[in-house]
Length: 143
Image (cartoon, rainbow, N blue to C red; front, top):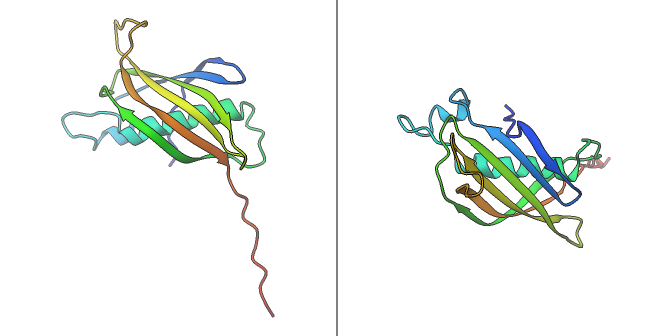
């Protein structure tokens, strides 16, 4: 099962991307999280940052191997994201590492109906590290 957490890309440069995701009550993962008080799970906010980071790092989906999340640091959660809300995800390139991984900063903001776009509450923020997925090589069998 694959969840698409990027509905639209609002802006993109070489070092920055802003995406939107509308949270519908039809989202499968909201059915059990939590009964009577559905909210977007925190891990799905992290996944929305990861998917936005992939769009930043490989906008044409042309990489030989996909970018994968290898580390999340200093994650902080704030506002609950309820069905009917929209999240704005901002990812900013921070640093290239010697091992080929890339450090990024992520920010998930909550947009509710009639929201003041200058003062959007933080739903999640933190730093993530992405790297190209390893291509597995077949193990030679001994004779």
